[in-house]
Image (cartoon, rainbow, N blue to C red; front, top):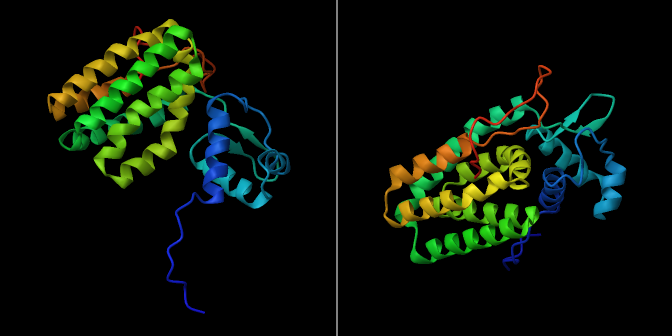
Length: 232
């Protein structure tokens, strides 16, 4: 039979929803590093079949959030210096590109949404609410990413940014996260002034300076912060 002509309302694919929920559970620590991931248990938890869970685990493996040993087990990948460093250069460059392309397209509404997200971020910081701070920061940076109109940028960030978001949560749990408020304000001012190059440099530098203090190094050492309080 021919494909029906009626256009159905868009909805997220089941596998995408499963991927997003598992990704978020890893980023927020619900699923801890080195925790074994059994598809039957995850399927029961999420109320889905094992097929979308297996597909999501494969995607999470490509994103560096899980590790699978053939014939053995799949576990949540530990947060280590190498994985953060590898993702960092890519994510920083993509955010710089996104901001550079977004600045000419940003409307007053976009800027107001950025200000509102930063206000929510500042409020969450004052209350010590790490989850709310993380959500507000993500909302803040997503505005330029969406406005830039580059699907490739969005795709790359979707794959590699979650690794940095795990590291980022460590910083938001400390006093250092408060310095992000001023950086957000500076970025908004540059965007409002239509200074695309300066805004792009700031966006890229912001992600480049994100480091972690307590992740195990693959060589047996410990990753340490090299800046004095800069987070996205």
